[in-house]
Length: 133
Image (cartoon, rainbow, N blue to C red):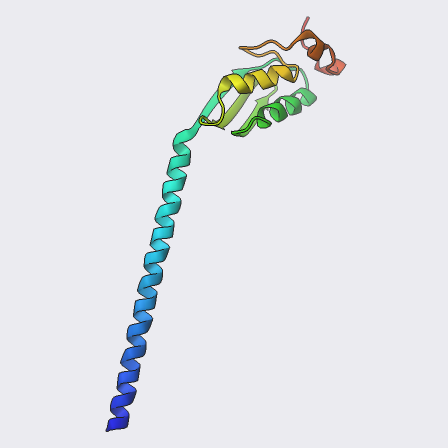
């Protein structure tokens, strides 16, 4: 009888400890998930998006424009549509702004709605990239 009682007591102790550990794990997992959700929400608030007119004429221009925009700290996405001549960017508004991005694009040789590329930079572009008349 004592032996049965000891086995029963050991069984109850094991079940109790297992349940305590799984409850703790769930709580820690829930906390981690809530923390991640808070971080994602905080990041989403700071992201700005803009679409800007930029002069260009070929696929090399597209690459140059996107690379110039992406080189700015805080720019998360940059895509230039050659047909519409529009640059779409997504960026962290705490790290940069539209003016900085458009200035970088102009510095790469491409006129845009706010800044004009200087003549020296524009003239250094390959012939297929020249868009001024």
